[in-house]
Image 1 (tube, rainbow, N blue to C red):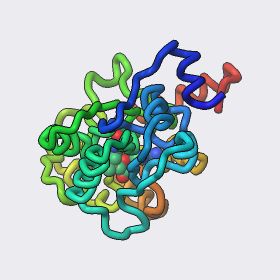
Image 2 (cartoon, rainbow, N blue to C red):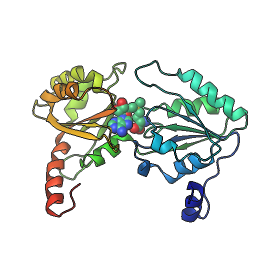
Image 3 (cartoon, protein in one colour):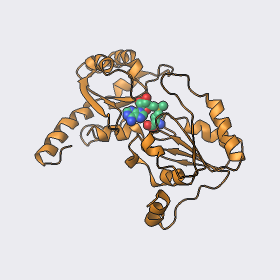
Length: 266
Ligand SMILES: C[S@@+](CC[C@H](N)C(=O)[O-])C[C@H]1O[C@@H](n2cnc3c(N)ncnc32)[C@H](O)[C@@H]1O
């Protein structure tokens, strides 16, 4: 059964990607099982799929036979395709009456520039649709058996960019005492840890590094705030990684222990 037949079987009907339209869709964290059915419908119908580096081969294999693939992103440390060039290309393809799927890792609007691209398309008069995806922060927590929220543990959770360009008051975040999930922090972890400690987070605060969440290379390291930078250095920077800091990390042990007792451990 091809993806379109599968969707028809599930839905009776499925959303139609019209010629001249752009769908800005999330592909989830990497595992094709995390794609939404609407993203799959986009893959099956698109004439052109403009994707970033976080969209893996296994997801792109679900493209329909008429689709051409265009890479637009950052790969192997080489400079990123300029954002202005990407939006110009999306507009050009839509004006050429193509069905365009702009596919991004995770959710297109969580540290993914989906909002900027949507605004550029709207400005240019191009019909578009935003299709959410499972963001790496949530998928990574689940894949590492760390619940995002638990009664009695946390009342909030923050998703933050750790990109060095971002100007952010980490000490204020530390003072909330709530767990923090940090994207794009692997190369910038030392100053972040220092700022969180200045904000009052104890050196022993539980922390996790989740690398390549949901992918075959997935790797989870459990540590504490004062050992975090050393652990990140040891892991290296070849795969995307998330950092989680807070008491919620401790739930993992309990969960895995109980799951093992129940015979359901991974
Ligand atoms: C430019 S942001 C894009 C985030 C994406 N839009 C999302 O919603 O997941 C890239 C960062 O997302 C995180 N990331 C994406 N996929 C990941 C994965 N499979 N495992 C761990 N972290 C991931 C990493 O922190 C990476 O540096």
